[in-house]
Image 1 (tube, rainbow, N blue to C red):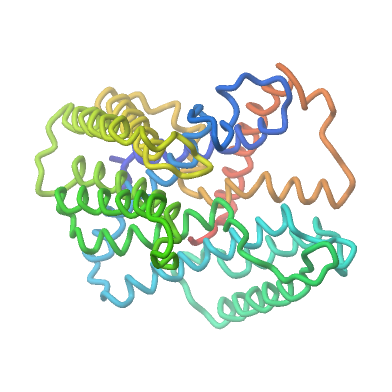
Image 2 (image 1 turned 30 degrees about the vertical axis):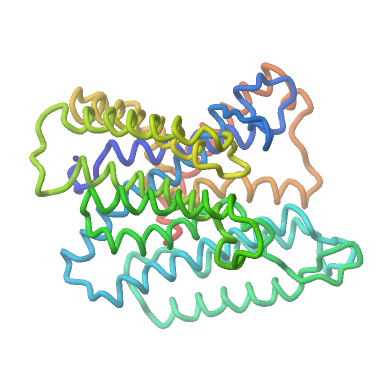
Length: 390
């Protein structure tokens, strides 16, 4: 534990996940990379290391969930305030996801009053006005700033034009990465409340999510399809709950914290999840289709990684390396968004990275350096006390 009460191994896991996210996002445009550094095709029945990055973020959301809720309850926060926080956070993630996915595809730039790159930059500026962290202070200036940001978001949504003829408004499309995280977070919070930090109940909630996903993909019409229309969200929520389960196993105040216990429990949970994934191999492994086997194998890898990180950091004291990823650990959303802001600015200005960075080893080296630079920028923003509160 750090002096501030934060669990350093969880921070390291979160920061490392954002670092790898930034790295693989940049690497996606580099030609000549091996398959294990690429997302597997939707119907490949396979997964690569890249296909574990998104579930790793879901998993770390789950690991933080019981700790955050416990801290809020310890402060005496009323139940309605807690759920207000959950709903506002979910809405924020959905807004980010929908705006970002519409900036990537579906737009008709020639029917808009501004280039899509400028529209994107204005969105990020408006989002900063709304979600800038004021360290708990609420003043008239804060309310005006947030009101201005919300108004700007509404105007930008109205200015958006989609479809071939520019007649279509903004649509959720596939919600974007942040939107998918938002839905998974909301579902997991609701189910976590039913579980009430009981290990058996958390396990049952995971089974329920995966059973729903399996039923949604197996039951044909005339079943009520509206009721079985969101298998992907259920699978993503199951990954969040896997993280919550491991956090409960490792950090429940009622359980004694003996040396090596967290690492051992992490390994044990990883084995159970991997076995469950093998039992569901009749459903192919696919990140794109969000299959149960992909989710369980991914969660198993995440549990193993966390066990290793916890052992190295909390038990062996190997903490120096975490400074590289610490900026992303304490400001993860802003660190994740930095490359998107830079890309939009370069696109608006008509700039591009040198072509040599788009292939082979130079591209791989640049993707790694790019991730390091983003961590540095995140550190600078942290020092300037610029943080997104989500």
